[in-house]
Length: 167
Image (cartoon, rainbow, N blue to C red; front, side):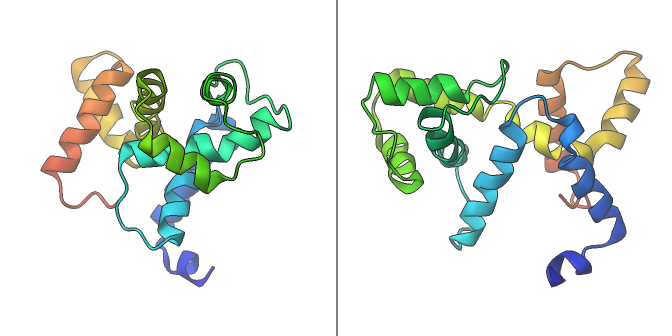
């Protein structure tokens, strides 16, 4: 935890806001955070959206399919794990690494579509607290609330334009 102590106060506030359980309507944010953490522990500094999504699914697979854990009505991870178990015949006792490897190498179009779809909004929801001030300022200027797809695009633009946003 020494590294966490060295993070400046503003980053601590944003990190706490980012991981605030009251802001979770699904398991996606925490699972995405876990996927990033897993890649970091493996020594990887970069990971594709598909790899992070595959890590999410692989982490959720056993609890959902073997232990019947319900991640909630809005959560789509169970659809993917159900598809893996029932259509692709993946054993419920398979480990995370195998499931991730299987997903990454799969040519199954439906599986790939579902996995890639996870990465469409989740990353933006997790890092959004770092951009809240920019988003609120933009919404104030245009006098309306921006839809999620526009916010995603705006976050991408901010990343390309500004070097001083430290996410």
